[in-house]
Length: 270
Image (cartoon, rainbow, N blue to C red; front, top):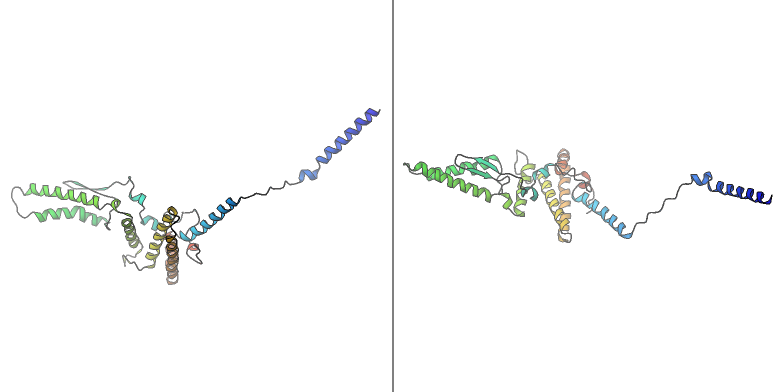
């Protein structure tokens, strides 16, 4: 009898303890979220990324790590990068002449551009030089003319290799890019108009991007940081002047330069 009472009491205690552990309050209780602890080093890195994001937005005129407006814009298509100039995939243009072929590089230096200029230098000029050298006519005139034409075409090939843009240094490449920008952003009525606000804004944007890529490689170049700030503010002044002069021209030039309004308007903090 005593043993049965003890067994029944232990069963009651076990059932009551299970009921207390599995009550609806405990089952519906939400687990407490653990606090995420951020180290001082990670917090410093986050602050640096935020600072770089704001700086990139002002300097490049686009959002952080977002180059969709720059890729495909008129300024990006106009300028030449060292990778594009020194690419091995570019095949030279071959002018097939009767005596010899002249291989013309894809990009020429010294402002040589266009089919008419290339034709004048590499096709017309050798023939005129040969004709000028012919002063007397005899039985050997044809042979001497062919030999002189071969020599002039050889000189044309040598001149084409010398005028190749791959032989230019950084200053030569920058000069060629400036010439291309001035020609692309001027009007047909006034070609090579360097005083046009669109041309000045394009030239400043080209300088800003070159200087920014330089500072990414040489982060301790403190002297050029001030030059970068000055260029960014100069571009903002030119675009502000264009906005007051003609709003439609201002709205049209921004996508051509790959810029956002937020990167050139308001207070610019670099």
